[in-house]
Structure formats: structure tokens, C-alpha cells
Length: 220
Image (cartoon, rainbow, N blue to C red; front, side):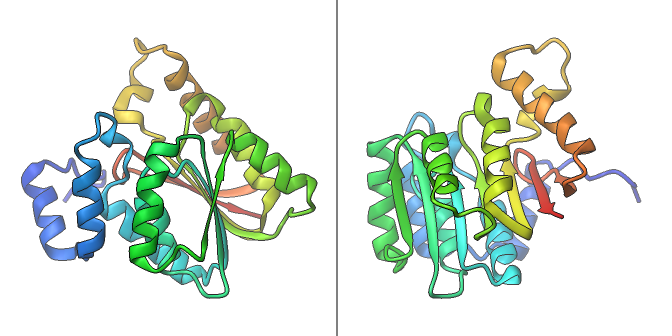
């Protein structure tokens, strides 16, 4: 028995899906539709969505911020498990992808919860802060342009209540964060945030090797 996380090959991954995945027909249809997009890799995996849904349910979350909505898979996973009345503010800049999300939100019965803000996410987050929304949110999910990850994190940390949770996606970045030969802007931004989070005394921290790396930060 190894003390390190298992290397999940295709056979073991399929076993994981066979024994634990509860992906709904609607989410499967959304995943299949998104798969035809050249940027389909931006969609979270089914096991990550199911894990996030469980976290939302365990927290009894009513107020969530999502930075990066894409075609709506993650927002549906969260919204379907929120306690009503609820609000999920969805930050994105792309009308094409979010039109797909809005169509599936309606089918999932969560269109009344999901509040789409089509604008640069920092504008939306800073606007919420200006409105006095600090400490009003239970959870934030960050899955957008990597260069701004630190700025998103800082803004979300102000908006999340003590005991609230920030989820940050892609923090293992396909393994590129560990390759010293990779020095592009996105990879460096994730590396810098990962190192910052390790010593950030404002949070409790756990970085998990689920999908492309998911970091959990609980605000103290």
C-alpha cells in the first residue's frame, strides 16, 4: 500500500466512475454538447462536480460566487445543492458559452438562482465589495484566466464569511507547475498563488489532486 496518492490510469479512472459517479442525464447531455467545443477542456470533470456538489450540501450554502462559468456544468452542480432561498452570482465575459449555460440552467430548474454577470470578473467582485457585500458569501469557486487568479482570490476572501470556502481550480495545471522548464505566464501565476496559499495564515488549506488540481481554502 502506497502512502502517496495513486496514479489514476484509464482503467482505475473507469472503475472510479463505475462505482461512484452519479452524473445526471442533464449533466451528461451538457458535457456531451460541450465536448464539441475546441475549448471543452475548460469544463470540470464529473467527479469534481460531484465533489463540489457535496461540499455545497455539507455547508448548507445559500450564497455563492463563481468566477468563470463557461457552459454551466459547475454552476448546475452547485445550484442544485444550495438551500433556498439562494443566489449564485456567475461571472463570465463570453456570451456564446453562457448562452449554453442559461439554457441548461432552465432545464435544471436553477435559472432563478443563477445570476449571470457578463463583465470582467474583477469588476463584478469589486462592485460587490463596494456594495458592502463583504462576508456575505458562503463559497466561491475560481476557474477563470490564471493570470488574475491572485486578484480573484483576494477579492473572494473579502466577500466570503469566516468559515466560508474558496475553491480554486487547475492548481496542478496538468503537472506543468512542477516542471521548471515551463515558464509561461499562466503557469507562473498558478505557482505563485500555490506558494502564497501555503503560508497564508488567513485560511486553512488543502490542495487535492482531483481532476486538474483543486485547492480548498477555508477562511479563518
